[in-house]
Image (cartoon, rainbow, N blue to C red; front, side, top):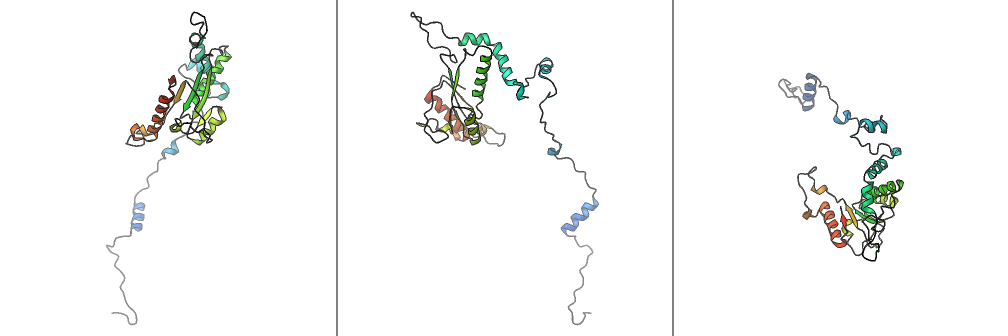
Amino acid sequence: EKPKGKDFFPPPATKGRKKSGAAAKKSSEAAEPKKKEGKKMYESFKPMSNPIYMDMSLDEIQKTKSFLDPCGMEATDDIIDRLVGQQLEKIGNLLHRALRPPESSGSKGTSVGGSLGSQTNPLVLGTACSGTDAPALALTIVQEQLERRGMGHLFKHDHVFSCEVEPYKQAYLARNFDSKLYPDISKLCDDPPRDVYGQEQPLPEFNLFVAGTSCKNFSMLMSNKRIDIEDKGCSGETFLAACELLFKEKPKYAI
């Protein structure tokens, strides 16, 4: 019977009733044995802050590891300078013949011209997409090593401009080089172009142009679609800008 003075609702039946999601999950976790969690990939990775063969001296490396160029392991060892110097010693005679000034030309016996890179015809470098300007650094090391070996008179170069869009790389270039610095390869053909300080700076004369234009749009590493040169992405624009500069200035050599 229904009790007087109160609404009576019988308790719900529990037999055959589905458990709620949280309760079902809890009971299933209790029933199944826990799986042992393995290490994450990043947990098992141990970065090496020391180079290979760090416990060996340079003499030991040269004697036992002839295949290895221990380049840049210790700044105090001047490894890069020493390697460049060794290469120069091997080709010293070739450089001497290639860069020596001409003895005479014509019936009047007047000295003219000279090989590119000689004292009378210096190698004049301009770079774009410069980064840390490795070409300028390499030529400087070559010059220094030639001077140490008494052959400094053979070679002469000058670094006249760099072009780099990244501000932190611009800061590096401004601190380490006295050459003119431009911010955008696509504006090098402006008449005149502006430098990173916003000043109009005509492009200096140069006979060697080195540019490593952007290639990320041509890569399919991070995407399944390649952007071609004609699509005018970052890679296409920098490449075409480098070509435009070559057609306009016509340097003797370009890389």
